[in-house]
Image (cartoon, rainbow, N blue to C red; front, side, top):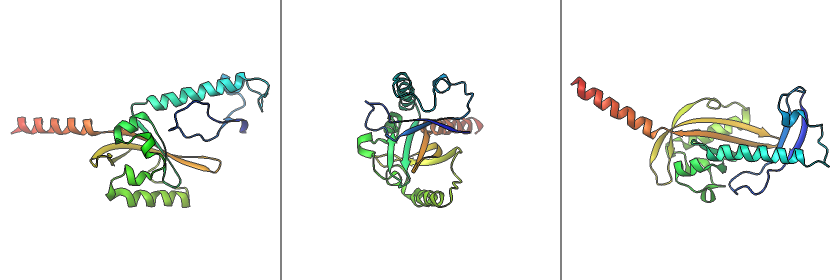
Length: 193
């Protein structure tokens, strides 16, 4: 059985770009090996701050891992609005966090030709809970702020926490890989002639 342990707002200070939902930490198994959770009573004793400090430290660590990732991470809410973008995504798409937060994902980083399919896919997921492109690697095309399109690998996952639904995209720019493949192909064609 799942036992709710605690509800905790993210610690301050975190950059404004990080969404600030309430995280609910749950004990998955009563005999979990995670010392952070296994040493906690349910609910935690409010007179001790150690558990709160441990949770805050763990959340800060998770946040820093995502922020420092080499791949882009972009989160979108159920309305299609961008609610989070890490530093790699800023570099990849040419938008600063301050400029893009709250803007439509499909209108900013998805090429015009793919926007209708994206928007219909989100509507389909919201209506049915089924998303055929979710939880798998997809090779797609993305749109840079300056208007050029580039190849990407995307893994998109939905996550519901209470009434809040977020879609998170983990994105890798494939431009250098495609360039290297084209160069190799030209070299092979040149030696074959």
